[in-house]
Length: 152
Length: 152
DNA sequence: CACCCTCCGTGGACGCGATCGACCGGAGCC
DNA sequence: GGCTCCGGTCGATCGCGTCCACGGAGGGTG
Image (tube, rainbow over all chains, first blue to last red; front, side, top):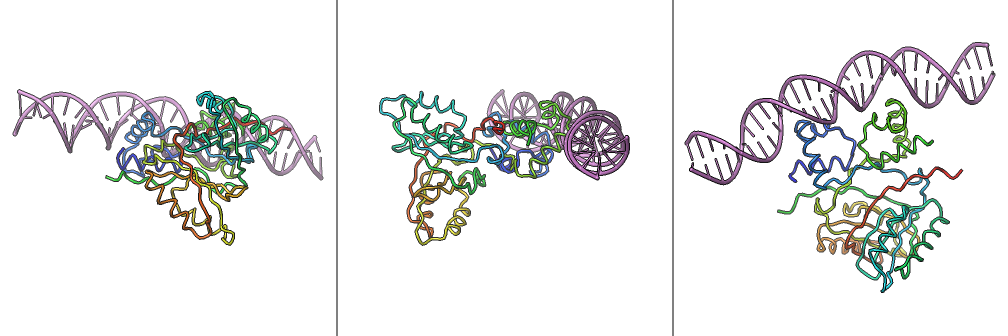
């Protein structure tokens, strides 16, 4: 993970479809060298995936909600997690410090679907209560932040 | 936005680096046709960007926090937003219904940096109070959900 | 100091993919 | 029926991805 690797990661975070040849020009190496470096970044887990970022409204997911979950004292956290994992509406799931064990980001098409989702969450064994906030608008999301070299 | 477009979007959400030729095979069109469709999806804003998804720890951003912001009654929301936008640590920013006007997702390297960020947020004109939750672990994030055809 | 090993890069070669232009067929409209 | 437009295929060309052989720098060892 040297300076060139960081440049590559930063370039690919900005545009995942850059060709190896283009990356090579940007970092001043040959295309095969870049190919190998990127391959290592992928297989070492630094780069997890390449994703197209889509306007949610365009695919019928106009409603974004953030849902805090308080667990039952008796519940099994892993079971709860597994149940959440089965719900495709839940785009992100964080295990949090604090009263609310989980914070979920969910996306659905309509408020009615959100209601159904909340009902399903509330009924999930191990879930004591939920608290839902609705995003009126997304100002920005997953903005890549510049990589700073390790403070050595 | 027909069924083929939806397939293309779904394929690219799963792997943004698929070649046009591969996409073409998957959807049963020729490569130039796919090229044109994807170009239209990009320029119409359905596809906003292609990003590499990176393990945050690998680039020195091991601390994830979710921060709710309560606005001052006198403050100007746009100014507050602009200030947030200048802070690279804030990866996502939602304008919310409820007492907390904003919910921010921030990523920093250390708890000390998080502390500094919260101080800066608290001092921002227009911000009345902040409430920070720390993510102990990210179970998953930005998981693409299958696209369902418009309910027609 | 010479030697060797390893790592990481370059350059060349070759096949495939990206991309452009020409053409074509069906839908909608005079 | 014939025009036009839209959106596709086909074919050709050029650049890119990817494999391979080679080479130089750096470090350990006799």
